[in-house]
Image 1 (spheres, one colour):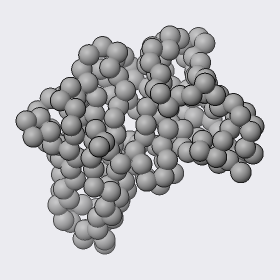
Image 2 (cartoon, helix red, strand yellow; image 1 turned 45 degrees about the horizontal axis):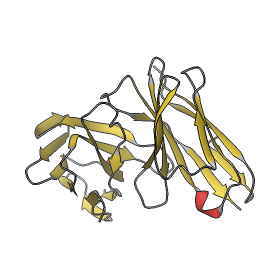
Image 3 (cartoon, helix red, strand yellow; image 1 turned 60 degrees about the horizontal axis):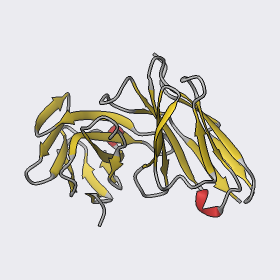
Length: 113
Length: 113
C-alpha cells in the first residue's frame, strides 16, 4: 500500500510566475486534502475534495489559488502570480472516507525568489 | 488567540526518559484528536488517533484526552534518539463536512543519547 505521493518535492520560481503541484492519494481514498505549512508552524487547512467535488475552501485560498481533482483520483493545486508570502510547504493528505484518519505526503516545498 | 495552543519547545530529554507533550484547545466542538510526528523536510506521520475523552495506548505511546479541561497529552516511554522530531497535535469536529484538521504549532523534541 503506497502512501500519498506529491510532485515535485521542491519548486523554485520567480515572483509572478505560475506553479502547479500534483498529489496522488492512497488508492481508494475518496477524501483528499490540501494544507500549507510555514516554518515553525503547524499545517493550515486550504481545501478538500470528496471524490471530484470540492467541498470546502479556506479563506487562505485566495483567488490566485485553484485546486482540482478532475477524475476523483489525483489532484492539482495551482498558484497564479506567485508572491513572496506563498513560500511554504504544501502538503496533501488523503483519507478512506469522512471521519477516518488523514495520511500525509511529504509535501512540495515552494521557494519564491 | 489560537484555537489550539502547543508549547513549541524545544524540549531535550535523555534517552530512556518519559516524554510528556501536551496541547490545550478552546473549541468545544472538537471530538477527534490526533498526534502526528514530523521529521525534518518530511510530511506529518500519524501516531495516535482518538475519539472523545479517554486514554489510548500503542506500544511506547499513550494518548490522553480530557475534554472537560480541553487538554490532550502524548506520553512517550523509553524514549529513543529516533523519537527526535517535531510532534504536532491536531483535532477536528464530528459533523459530516467538518473535516479540516486544526493543528498546534508543534513541539520540537530532541532525545539525547
